[in-house]
Image 1 (cartoon, one colour):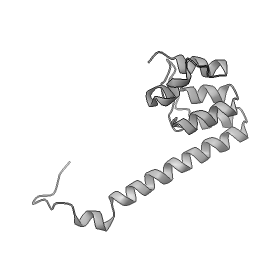
Image 2 (cartoon, rainbow, N blue to C red):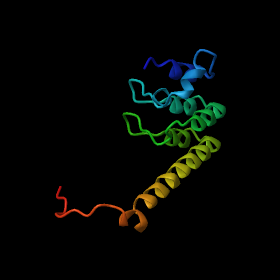
Image 3 (tube, rainbow, N blue to C red):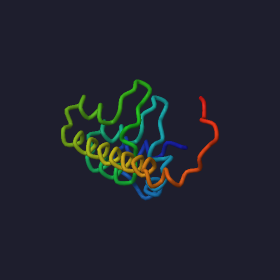
Image 4 (cartoon, one colour):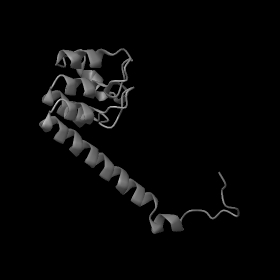
Length: 123
């Protein structure tokens, strides 16, 4: 990736050239040399509107940079309570989605349709 979305977020706005990048998952979660994502830079810039936009477009709020910090950790460090709440909500929604997906995959109805192996798998 070319980092154009990250640079736009650092400047505090998305222009006509970078707007299409919001539709590309690999750009939303692209990491710079320090491992920081556009979402982290939006938090650093205290730009609530960009944080909301990036989350809405699918940015992963749980990604970590090279020091294992997340966007939420940055928001808490900079005492940005409103942005921290947005990030917590995003993490909760994602976790519920993953929990529901796991429940469907492990449901008894699905398990009855799985083929039975003669020997158990060993790892």
